[in-house]
Image (cartoon, rainbow, N blue to C red; front, side, top):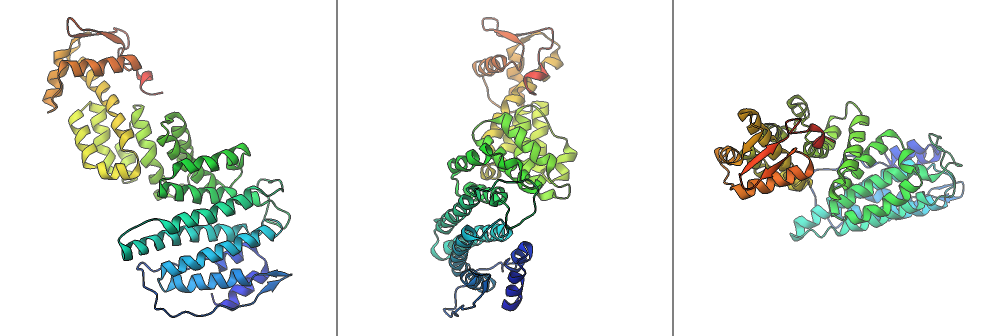
Length: 398
């Protein structure tokens, strides 16, 4: 759109038309150094006594530099644009600017990441300085929407009398994404408390609520709160749009490890459907108690799992693999008084060196957790299994 078309959209005062007009076009893939040439932006626009000129000019500057591929200069202009829009949001009645604020928050996030990457190419050092400054801008937007005194009415249309709180959840999700990128997860608590104490996480549109539960589920994983992680990630998967295959894959990347830890193994068909083939040998290894394949798969995909933050969780799934190995040896021998030497031989056959003491330690842990019903006779080097349900499924699948 040219300047006159953007002005015309703003004059209509249609929230969605304004947001559409002031959305950045697709950005070029490559960063281009600034040519050193610049132009002045001096458009004037006042509507019903509200001066849109600072917002409009900062947006035009951002757009031109972004289209040219100069992401560093574009982000500098974007930060001015976002700051002026925050001031306009504070003084404007109602929530008609919320769609524009959402578009602006998304652009600030993406441009900051691109600008940091461009800066790293030039200096060989990524300090995430622009993304950190972008966090401050979004936190200001979050504060201005959260602290609006008007009461939020769910599903109410945008109006000059509406509450700005309707825009909170989208901004929170953008901040979550930035905190995860910056590895500052401790800051997530500053968003969770005010949002959930006011039940704002239950009053957004379905897309925002799904995204929120996805990030909260990931946060639960890092805090070892697996019950909550499974609950939130399951909600996100169940309510994700049926055609959003990429988003479902993102959710499953974190939900599957939680399920595996509890002995709930996904089907190969599901893994193939969402191209999560790295989990297929992992699942098969756990099902068979195949420690060798388990370790190989974990090692082969180590970098990917570490990047996603699921490596330590998947490593804990070894407990389920151990339990299934003992169960497999029991089924093969049919013995309720199982000599531990049989287990040691099975483990050595898998190419893993493990002595009796290590086997006893693993067994003691499984018995303590209730994954195996029985006791160890240390003097006789045998595992005495319960004759009734020695490997209770309920102890693993909770």
